Length: 148
Image 1 (cartoon, rainbow, N blue to C red):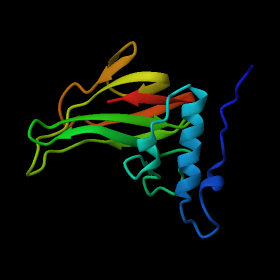
Image 2 (cartoon, rainbow, N blue to C red; image 1 turned 45 degrees about the vertical axis):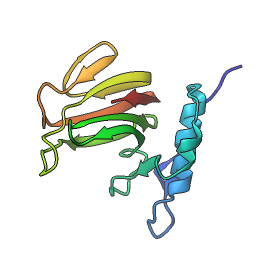
Image 3 (cartoon, rainbow, N blue to C red; image 1 turned 90 degrees about the horizontal axis):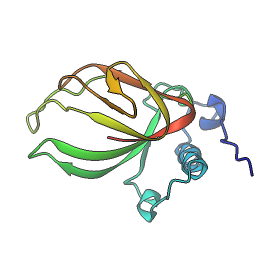
């Protein structure tokens, strides 16, 4: 049986007045998970699983979904699962320190699909070379499921 990953045009995710249709976006990520045989935990049906259009109005090009499995500000440590639809990007950004934690340092393990980044990487693992380093990420044509 050949499965097909559904890819929608950007207009699918917005009303005529430009309002982001978050539930349709969530369902697109669930389709991505099912396509890659990723088990969808019950917790993903809660607000813990978030979806962002990054306020660009171009969700099909630039967006992200994810869930934080673990967060500890005392050690500036978190566990995060990220989901990118086919060819979707996280724009260039960086994580500066705050009054609570230092600058964030990241590494990514690609579970399914592909990502393209502008930073240090070897095989299935990519990482920042220094805290607060600028970086971006784009999924390949089959999307990506990435553990951070």
